Image 1 (cartoon, protein in one colour):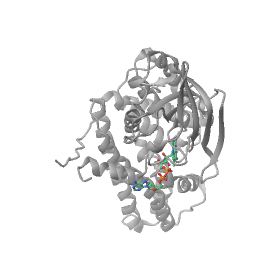
Image 2 (cartoon, protein in one colour):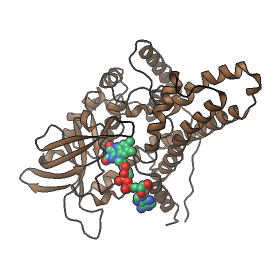
Image 3 (tube, rainbow, N blue to C red):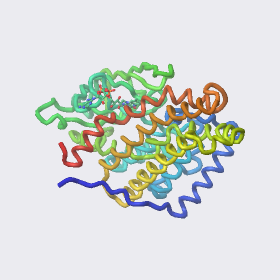
Image 4 (cartoon, rainbow, N blue to C red):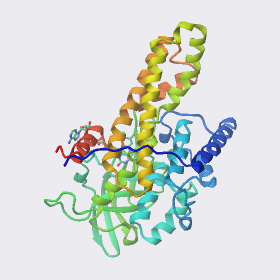
Length: 390
Ligand SMILES: Cc1cc2nc3c(=O)[nH]c(=O)nc-3n(C[C@H](O)[C@H](O)[C@H](O)COP(=O)(O)OP(=O)(O)OC[C@H]3O[C@@H](n4cnc5c(N)ncnc54)[C@H](O)[C@@H]3O)c2cc1C
């Protein structure tokens, strides 16, 4: 039977709105004190100092049990925190993966020793993880990974090469997807996840510069790296199942449609000034174009929030999350382009001021939105399967 998607309206609880005011006050103070410069796509900007400040405020790992350094708050509160940080363009990249992905994964599949060892440091904003999934010949087709771990006394010897590893050069650990038994007819069998401490002997790291010329990605080479049994995550052979559930954590959050919001926000001031000078702009196609962006943003937010609310209630919504990521990241590609056209038509400089700076960053970064975390073509295949069309 064909599945339908439902995105019931979600209302944020009072406590989440209270938190919003606290976060805004914190961000205002940080900005005033020069704690950060707002950025486009700011979850790709890392500031360990900023992450530690969030940790001190109790805003990392905030949904986790207290014994692992968490604050036992709701995922809707975390949602509000996240949307405020991204809207402000705050540099959240250092802790992003560990807070969003690694902690929940350890809660689900990790051992008690792994949780106690790593989660409190993540919650303090001091311990960072990288994702070791992609390889030169295994991106969309992740089951093709060739990095392998061979059984040795007391652990595994890891050999292989990972690419596009975001912030691996600033991370303490990486969760590596690898093959622990040879490929057979079931390509998804025989894969496992190992938690690798990145200062272990046998690891080499090289920068891969992105389109903007920045060192964000890395190539990470493992040459017979010894990984003890205590660093196996979940069960040997269950890596595929674990990775799929890990990806679900990262697909429907505000980072899939708010990455370039600072560009839009910084356009509104100059645009209002232009409209003030030329009254006839008030009803112009420019304001209609801004309205169209805001409408899409509001709809995406409602869909994403709806998923957050249902995830909080324990639902499993991988297909709905893929829909939000597909629509949201297409919006992310559209926003800088539309903002550029609106600004150009209104006679606003594309090169100067806060808007010019954020726009320039966004133009170089937006192409990655529809690739990272699984490309849109792959997501649409998953959606089609979910609808019973494939
Ligand atoms: C900013 C950024 C950060 C990233 N960070 C990390 C990270 O930290 N760790 C990590 O492991 N990876 C990371 N990645 C890698 C990312 O997950 C991969 O780029 C992505 O999964 C696509 O893989 P690929 O680059 O090998 O492209 P390919 O898989 O080679 O795909 C190339 C093109 O072909 C299309 N295509 C492929 N197969 C199909 C198909 N079956 N049907 C239709 N179209 C298809 C794709 O959609 C794409 O357009 C990051 C990527 C970016 C852009």
